Amino acid sequence: MNPKTLGRAVVAPLMLAAAGALAGSFDGTYTGTLSCPAFPKQPPLRVDIAVTVSGAMATYEQTAKPGTETDVGAQEAGSGSVSPSGEIVLNGGCRGGFSCVTEYRGDLSNMPIHLKGNQRWWFRSGER
Image (cartoon, rainbow, N blue to C red; front, side):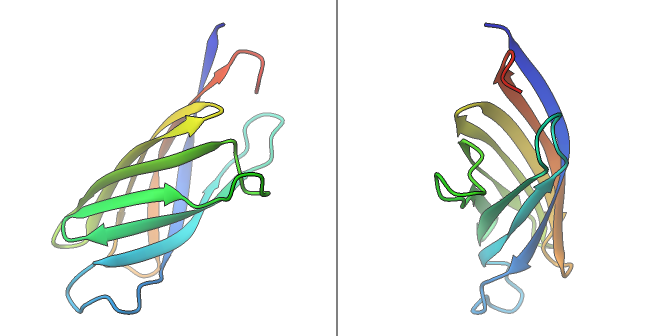
Protein backbone atom coordinates (compact mmCIF):
# COMPACT_ATOMS: atom_id res chain seq x y z
CA MET A 1 0.00 0.00 0.00
CA ASN A 2 1.08 3.51 -0.75
CA PRO A 3 0.71 5.83 2.27
CA LYS A 4 -0.46 9.41 1.85
CA THR A 5 1.03 12.20 3.92
CA LEU A 6 -1.05 15.24 4.80
CA GLY A 7 -0.17 18.14 7.06
CA ARG A 8 -2.24 20.82 8.73
CA ALA A 9 -1.69 23.79 10.97
CA VAL A 10 -3.35 23.61 14.35
CA VAL A 11 -4.46 26.11 16.96
CA ALA A 12 -5.11 24.66 20.40
CA PRO A 13 -6.56 27.07 22.93
CA LEU A 14 -6.24 25.73 26.47
CA MET A 15 -7.99 26.98 29.59
CA LEU A 16 -6.44 26.61 33.02
CA ALA A 17 -8.19 23.88 35.01
CA ALA A 18 -5.77 23.58 37.95
CA ALA A 19 -7.10 25.97 40.59
CA GLY A 20 -4.47 24.84 43.10
CA ALA A 21 -1.40 25.79 41.07
CA LEU A 22 1.18 27.67 43.13
CA ALA A 23 1.97 31.32 42.40
CA GLY A 24 5.06 31.51 40.20
CA SER A 25 4.64 27.90 39.12
CA PHE A 26 2.99 26.57 35.98
CA ASP A 27 2.36 23.15 37.57
CA GLY A 28 -1.14 21.82 37.03
CA THR A 29 -3.45 20.34 34.43
CA TYR A 30 -4.72 22.47 31.57
CA THR A 31 -7.64 21.33 29.42
CA GLY A 32 -8.76 22.57 26.04
CA THR A 33 -9.67 21.75 22.46
CA LEU A 34 -7.54 21.10 19.39
CA SER A 35 -9.23 22.85 16.47
CA CYS A 36 -8.04 22.03 12.97
CA PRO A 37 -9.27 22.83 9.45
CA ALA A 38 -10.92 20.00 7.53
CA PHE A 39 -9.21 17.49 5.28
CA PRO A 40 -10.89 17.09 1.88
CA LYS A 41 -14.33 15.46 2.32
CA GLN A 42 -14.00 15.58 6.13
CA PRO A 43 -15.45 17.89 8.80
CA PRO A 44 -13.08 20.18 10.76
CA LEU A 45 -11.34 18.37 13.61
CA ARG A 46 -12.15 19.29 17.22
CA VAL A 47 -10.84 17.04 20.00
CA ASP A 48 -10.44 17.55 23.74
CA ILE A 49 -6.91 17.45 25.17
CA ALA A 50 -5.29 17.71 28.59
CA VAL A 51 -1.78 19.09 29.25
CA THR A 52 -0.13 18.29 32.59
CA VAL A 53 2.84 20.38 33.75
CA SER A 54 5.20 19.35 36.55
CA GLY A 55 8.31 21.49 36.92
CA ALA A 56 10.12 21.77 33.60
CA MET A 57 8.31 18.76 32.08
CA ALA A 58 4.92 18.53 30.38
CA THR A 59 2.81 15.72 28.94
CA TYR A 60 -0.36 15.87 26.89
CA GLU A 61 -3.01 13.49 25.65
CA GLN A 62 -6.18 13.49 23.65
CA THR A 63 -9.06 12.83 26.02
CA ALA A 64 -11.78 11.75 23.55
CA LYS A 65 -13.50 8.53 24.52
CA PRO A 66 -13.45 5.76 21.87
CA GLY A 67 -16.72 5.57 19.95
CA THR A 68 -17.82 9.13 20.77
CA GLU A 69 -18.34 11.98 18.31
CA THR A 70 -14.87 13.43 19.02
CA ASP A 71 -13.10 10.07 18.55
CA VAL A 72 -10.90 10.40 15.43
CA GLY A 73 -9.83 6.74 15.36
CA ALA A 74 -6.40 7.29 16.91
CA GLN A 75 -5.09 8.42 20.27
CA GLU A 76 -2.67 11.36 20.33
CA ALA A 77 -0.17 11.89 23.16
CA GLY A 78 3.24 13.43 23.74
CA SER A 79 5.61 15.25 26.04
CA GLY A 80 7.84 18.27 26.16
CA SER A 81 9.39 21.03 28.20
CA VAL A 82 8.37 24.21 30.01
CA SER A 83 10.83 27.08 30.51
CA PRO A 84 10.94 29.10 33.76
CA SER A 85 9.16 31.94 31.88
CA GLY A 86 6.32 29.61 30.77
CA GLU A 87 7.26 28.82 27.18
CA ILE A 88 6.02 25.31 26.39
CA VAL A 89 7.06 22.98 23.54
CA LEU A 90 5.26 19.66 23.06
CA ASN A 91 6.08 16.85 20.61
CA GLY A 92 3.96 13.77 20.13
CA GLY A 93 2.15 11.48 17.79
CA CYS A 94 -0.87 9.31 17.09
CA ARG A 95 -1.38 5.58 17.32
CA GLY A 96 -4.41 3.63 16.24
CA GLY A 97 -6.21 3.73 12.89
CA PHE A 98 -3.57 6.01 11.32
CA SER A 99 -0.31 7.76 12.23
CA CYS A 100 0.67 11.35 12.92
CA VAL A 101 3.55 13.35 14.39
CA THR A 102 2.86 16.65 16.13
CA GLU A 103 4.54 19.74 17.53
CA TYR A 104 2.85 22.51 19.55
CA ARG A 105 4.30 25.70 21.06
CA GLY A 106 2.90 28.38 23.31
CA ASP A 107 3.28 30.49 26.43
CA LEU A 108 1.63 29.49 29.71
CA SER A 109 2.11 33.00 31.14
CA ASN A 110 -0.40 34.54 28.68
CA MET A 111 -4.13 34.15 29.32
CA PRO A 112 -5.99 32.74 27.58
CA ILE A 113 -3.37 30.17 26.65
CA HIS A 114 -3.06 29.38 22.94
CA LEU A 115 -0.79 26.68 21.55
CA LYS A 116 -0.01 26.67 17.84
CA GLY A 117 1.57 23.88 15.92
CA ASN A 118 1.61 21.36 13.15
CA GLN A 119 0.38 17.85 12.61
CA ARG A 120 1.63 15.52 9.89
CA TRP A 121 -0.73 12.62 9.14
CA TRP A 122 -0.25 9.34 7.27
CA PHE A 123 -3.23 7.48 5.82
CA ARG A 124 -3.35 4.37 3.67
CA SER A 125 -3.89 5.36 0.05
CA GLY A 126 -7.56 5.85 -0.79
CA GLU A 127 -8.78 6.22 2.80
CA ARG A 128 -8.95 10.03 2.96
